Image 1 (tube, rainbow, N blue to C red):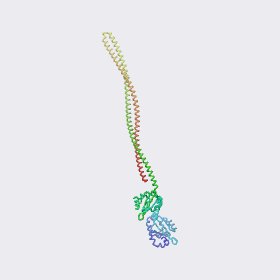
Image 2: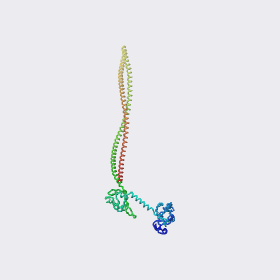
Image 3: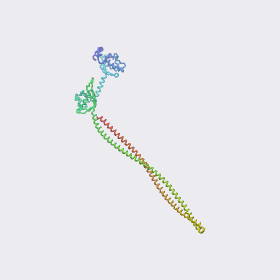
Image 4: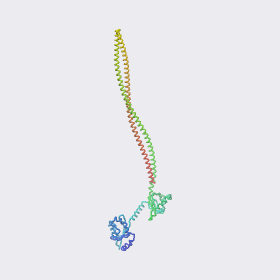
Length: 492
């Protein structure tokens, strides 16, 4: 068609043939003025007209004929230079706003001279999408194992990555059934038949799969089986994209063995720790009970010593009182001795008077005898006086004996009081020493009691800490169990 255009521009320009073709045709002269657009290109550009005006405000499909192709370019200098030198067909892609267009620009020649241009327009979107899809597919083929099956499971083709992973050549698997790659037990299972039924219904399947390669080689893959539909929505083939994860699965298998071993050791250590914590808790409880008992005894001892200390203080007070009273009695005994000694002087005086009375009585008797009858009455008086004097003498002797007895008794009392005072002094010193010792013992006992209370508190704290350790061990056991579960999922 383009060859005919190049041969006779006048004939083509006059025909209506271009109006009926589906190709999007635009014709411009050497001055780049648009001389013709067929209905197809007009409709094509009209669909994009609103978007094109966002970039080219003056763009109007209805006024294209007669305008220059510069209308499609913000900076047309480059296009003008390129078209001015154009001597053969040229492919280009231009972007106008969100749209991309593929252009095939061909020079119109007559008698060896270029007389204009024919431009075929196409939406570049589909081509670019196809290029993108092709690039994606190429990228997949470079990095993944790809194999295609008919809907009945027959191998159509496979790429090099797949063949390398399984150890086959293409001619060894092409035309063979997918069951070549699975073990006999799985092949006979209802699950395997359901797997292919799902694919034929258009349901894709993905996951990790254990497969069999050449000579029984175990190959683990992670991938997806993807049904491919035709334009009518019918599944025409199955394409599997997969990654060889055999090494990773082997590592996970080894890891599982290691985890089982390590978790076994952890379980043993946790059990031992739990047992030791329980033993420590029991010991702490027993220690706490013992310390509480000792603390209570220490408090009772402190109370008893405090009572003893008070009693000793009272004893000292009583001893001091007795000592003071003994001193008072001693003083009174001294005064009694002094009084007795004074009475001795009085008795002596009385005895002296009695002696003088006796002497006077004797003289009176003598004189009465001399007087004879006349002196008889005087003699009687003298006799009575003498009797009184004798009685006074006897009384004074009795008084003297009593005074001597008083003096002796006072001396004995004074001696006894001296002994009592000495004993009381000794008792006072003993009481003082005992009180000091008791006071020191009370201080020590108070300190012991306080220390035992502190010890009891410390033991209770230790018991609480042990309980906390027990809880922590329990929580650690739970965490280990969760870790074990996670590890099982990981290496499954």
